[in-house]
Amino acid sequence: MIKYDASYPIQHIKVCLKLWLTSGDKSPDFYFIYGCLLDDRELATLAIRFATNTTKVWGSTIQAGVSTPACAADKSLLQAHIMDLSSWRISRFKRIPDDYKFAWMRATRGTPVTASGQMDWSTIADKFSLILDEIHGS
Image (cartoon, rainbow, N blue to C red; front, side, top):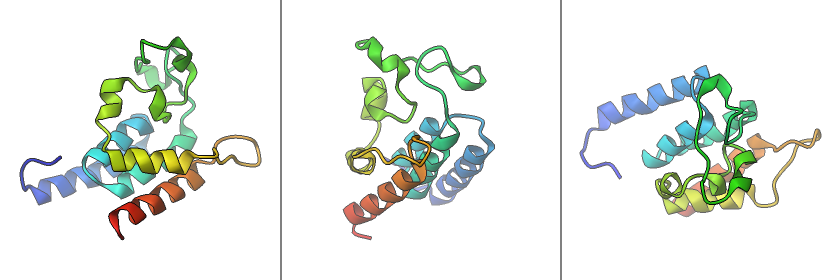
């Protein structure tokens, strides 16, 4: 994915992305994509953890006035959670490397929920990280 060897600037970008994620300026899906593209498992996992603070869905009920278009082919996707990769536009979905997609699908399999009935994003993040470690041989 990375065309040039620019380890110091890339490391700086990764650190900044992690700091920006904690500021809550953008939604977790934005950081998840960059975590995947930069092959930064920690950033991708952290983005999943921060999905607990995300109540926005595709469509008009968007946090901080930022609107993300839904997949035009299926209007039922308008109410999908922002971290539901299957509801993303195809062009956006294709940006995610296959190993990250596979880890995401496995981590969300069975849809872990909390005692209050909401998705347990911490458990999903832990499973996602473990699966990626297994895929990459760590």
